[in-house]
Amino acid sequence: MAIDFEQALGVHPSALAFRTERAKVIAGNLANADTPHFKARDISFENAMDSVASQARAKHMQRRSISQHHEMLYRNPMQPSQDGNTVELGIEQAKFAENAMAFETSMTFLNMKFSGLRSAIKGQ
Image (cartoon, rainbow, N blue to C red; front, side):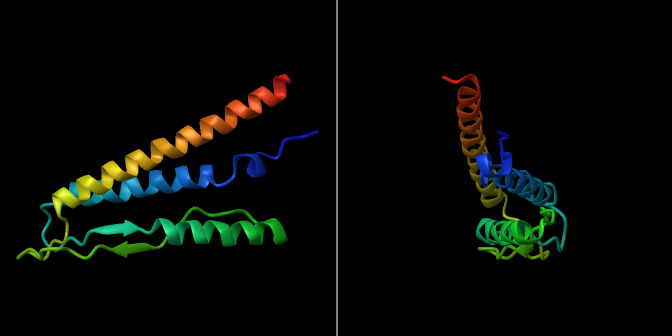
């Protein structure tokens, strides 16, 4: 009997891909903290997971591949700067740390899934 990894691993690979993409976006915000008129960007986790779920349903029905592109949103600053830059260093650092912790959590869940599959394959 073959193992369907998409079903066995659930949403965790998509969550890891999202967290990786979001880390790149936030890192870009941090890199441009001093760039005049730069607008901070972010990705909504809820919108991304809704997109993954709808694409998974479409794939189930039509066997199409799932893309990992998510809608980019602009972040609203708490205090606008004079040069038009909307990056707030402290907030971006907190968002980056939050995203890193969520990545670690998803990785832990994925490792637990693999451990369970390994045990099932060994018959333990």
